[in-house]
Amino acid sequence: MTMTPPGTIIEYLDSGRFVCGLVLQDSNNRLRLLNQNGREMNLPASRVVTVSKTKHQINTSREDRIALLKEMAALRADLTDAVPLEEIWELASEEEESVFPADFLAELSFGENLTDDQSAAFLRAVFTDRFFFKYKNEMVNVHTPEQVEQLRHQRRKEKEKEAILTTGAAYLQAIMRGEQVTAEQWPDQKRILGWIADFVLFESEADQADVVRQLLKKAELHQPNQAYRLLVRAGVWGNDENLPLLRAEQGEILIV
Image 1: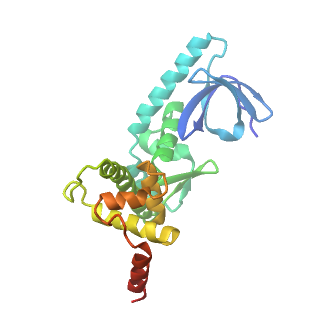
Image 2: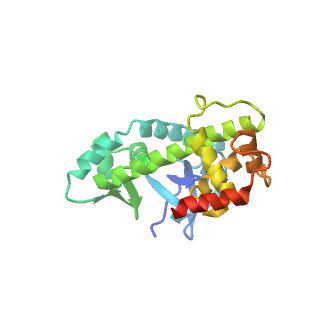
Image 3: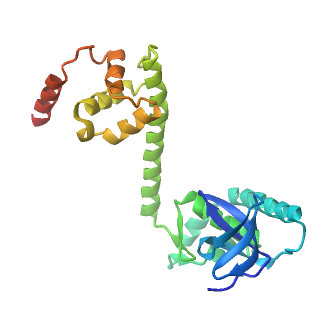
């Protein structure tokens, strides 16, 4: 593996976020570096995403080095927001090849003579968006139009689920507090309470069991029988609802 000289600015991912680091030493595929948060650490070289061509001084004060890294991180974040990723994808899709060096695609946005910041910003955009490109083995793969549409559809479904969980949890808590929640306030009320009823009756065999588990967890309804009490408070069931009978009736409906 190529050595990374001291003074190189690298970027790595930490909990999904890009972090800039100034390399102080490369030893046995581990980089000793100072990152933008002022932390000195040893980083496996395999975690490095971008490497600067420009070398920077490492014998300046610690404060100056951290200030440099923070300034660079802020600039790259601003440049990332301005990358027209869909336009670049449209141009790349016209090529016969489907795999490109990152800098080749970055030049479609920033022009020739890329700076380290521009090159890094393009890769940040690729990692952030994920619809149009995929970075793999130090190359950028261009998604097909079918892949893009599939990823967009998947994201729409995820956002719908997030909305159901966030909104639903708030209304479930309101119901448990004894508040009146109308269909106008919560249009999904009947559907979601139906999911919860199925879950109480059939547990893991219910069609929306996973969603209901997440919903109850988000609403902090962790205790046994809280889902049952919720349905009673919502007026779906009575205090002494005959659950075995309901299971049998639901089973007959499924058979029919």
